[in-house]
Length: 465
Image (cartoon, rainbow, N blue to C red; front, side, top):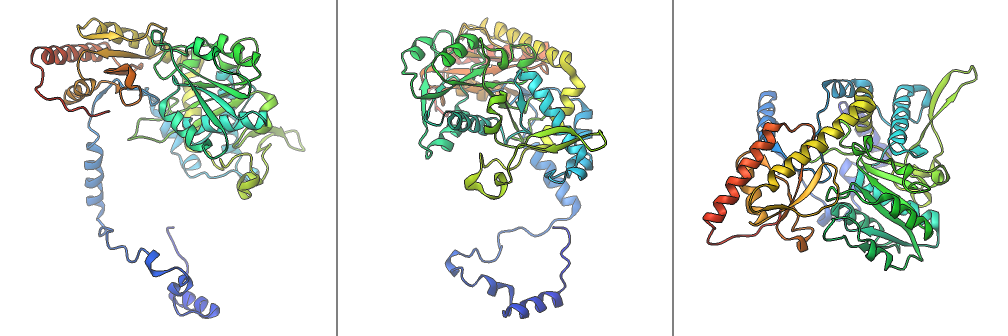
């Protein structure tokens, strides 16, 4: 708080009124053993010049690398106008738009965001965002269970991002909801249909379908959607918004379309900034609207016929009576939504499609050049979007470390999440990668693997990345 208006005389007057001698007496019911005491580990204050130097040193610790890692966080070009506008005071300091007459700008922006996201997903309604893609998937699972009421099993493919699966498990583990995992086809890297059909579908509330999946592969969304609906389940689509500029939207999957769509909005104008920030999006069919958590902004007209915007279809219990709420999602990532809306408006449908096309083309070129190296092979044969899995004949962790020493973030080692795949890495290329970047990566990869083949280390220490 920048300014505390109470003088020392005001404080003493208030303390005398309640009958205590000091502020500490107000907390005397807290045992001394539980109190933290003085803040003796907080550093002394720094001057402006010292703060600037400290923050520059901290920023430089991240280094400058050519990035070929994705795995749910993607480096895309962000036009300069996006954050110049997003950080204007009207957006940067805006808070919950409860008072519609004072928040028309914020409400209109959120409404535009909802409209754009429903356009990408092909579904009827969208909320005003969630914390991130992982918590968005967890909310979709809870939503599906609420809609079914008596069904409390969720079919979760292992081709879903492993961190997303962990978040879902954490959210539902004490809510009597069972997560049943479905394996993947070892040759294609997509959901194993035979394993799916061996499951007992009765009692399952929903099937989660990632598109693209964690390996970058494209699932048979039409067949999976129709199978789920034929067995009385809802379909939860977990999608990359950039890919939707080219791929079939979830609302058109199969005969009836997916019922809920969620995903991570970071590719839409949010930078890779030391691990955040992120935001999740969620859409659904009209029939599930009342089950959808979070805010929804509606467009209406006033008594004079002028258009206006307001929060709608959300009970106050969402915020003040948590036990009665549809969800405990009580806020959204409004600043990120602002950036995403401006980003999508600047690029337009053609621009977003071009980003997706270039990302796909760059990844195909990357996979082609790396797979031509002796000791590197592509693992899966399913079509992919802008990520793919490669197997190395050397320890992946050591190869990635050697690449990093050359200023290249070469991908994500998968042994930690999928030990059965061995020394494999997940690589990604977006529109930001040039032909020179890809050629340099391939050259360094070949040099590192050739050197390790000719001069293998005497002892190799395995560390998961």
